[in-house]
Length: 274
Ligand SMILES: NC(=O)c1ccc[n+]([C@@H]2O[C@H](COP(=O)([O-])OP(=O)(O)OC[C@H]3O[C@@H](n4cnc5c(N)ncnc54)[C@H](OP(=O)(O)O)[C@@H]3O)[C@@H](O)[C@H]2O)c1
Image 1 (cartoon, protein in one colour):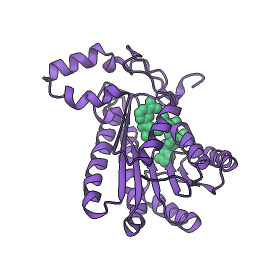
Image 2 (cartoon, rainbow, N blue to C red):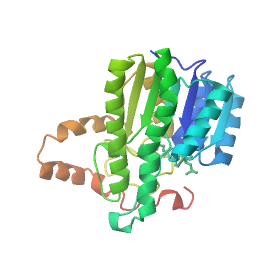
Image 3 (cartoon, rainbow, N blue to C red):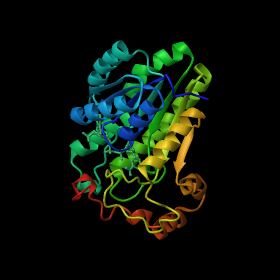
Image 4 (cartoon, rainbow, N blue to C red):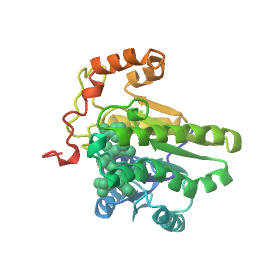
């Protein structure tokens, strides 16, 4: 059981979407919060809003979490300003949403820098203090795309499969070396934050577009109860079982459920009003 009250929670990508909501909720729950985000103005705004709702300090730090040097420099500032991090939430993420041959080399590299490599840089910066104290929690916001690939997601799915693998290997490492430090892999289907604007679901009862507030509350509960995996909706949890089917049957189910066509009308944040 991990409490959030009086803890220092660091959230990457806390300027918008899921990260911003986690910042606000952790502040409301009595935590000190640090935000690392590319969007400095958005992060400062989220920090001011969170500080007004909570008792603990909330600080925003401009940082490209995919840049190893920047993470090291900001981590030193975070530790000096707010002390050791108790709960690290690796939430920052990017999506390109293009077929492989339309992706630029820069898109591909950015996806891996932010969605995968950043997990290494932030975790290596803040884990040592957790290990020394024998307690802590690391949440990696991966995706259901870390369990199943679909068109227009070659870079995204590959980066999230890597994030899922990273979290599993880390969990097992820590179980041996620092059992008081817990991990959570978050593997949601699409969420209504605007990051994936334009995606469609064929069966909203089975595979709903998730609400940002619901995912946030599930992540907070997972931290409190040391839950290793958060799969949303429940159907995502059946994916490893479905993998026992032959590939043609697995692909057929994904086609039938509309998963392989979900990104056909993807616009992302370029969508008007998103
Ligand atoms: N939305 C979905 O449908 C969905 C589904 C499954 C999983 N997820 C995952 O959930 C997480 C949060 O997604 P979201 O929907 O809340 O996205 P979002 O609203 O786009 O928020 C992501 C935040 O991360 C920041 N960011 C991007 N690149 C960064 C970098 N290099 N360094 C630091 N910050 C950076 C963004 O800043 P800028 O605005 O300046 O880019 C933004 O503030 C992501 O990891 C995403 O992959 C999302």
